[in-house]
Length: 202
Image 1 (cartoon, rainbow, N blue to C red):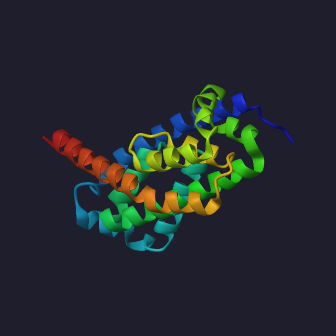
Image 2 (cartoon, rainbow, N blue to C red; image 1 turned 90 degrees about the horizontal axis):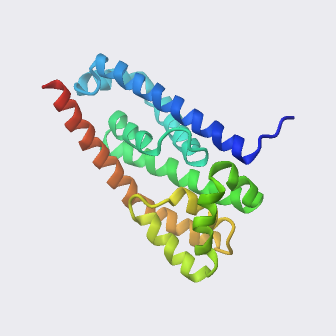
């Protein structure tokens, strides 16, 4: 069995991220031409036969993009809101991100630093690992970053698995903190997309 080095794994993830972004852009162009971004009726018709499989597949994709960040997180959050509406999209985003974050914690706890270096560079690892020197301070820092937009929460979720943080503490920080950033990203992206489509339509 072939084992990839951490550097090779990160390179592969970067390539897959670029490919995924291109595929998503092409899909968005295709869906835009179908009219599902500008017509609620067409969107409902498109999703009519995907009421069960659609949400399940989306949540699984969201989990995978948290554990192995191939799809840009912002794009997947936007996809949830666009295809399922603000409320259902938020719920599916929330469930997927929380499950993925919990998986990250246990993967890091069981497989340690070597696993993390397959996902992030050693430079990034060294930049944030210093925050784990004091467990109490790291718990507070972690909680603030989970709530704060633009924070490197995926990296910190992995690092939390290396610390002595109790899973119960991690669980409640994720469950109570994630809704705020997910809502902020989702609605900001949704309104930004709406503005862009109106601009293009002029």
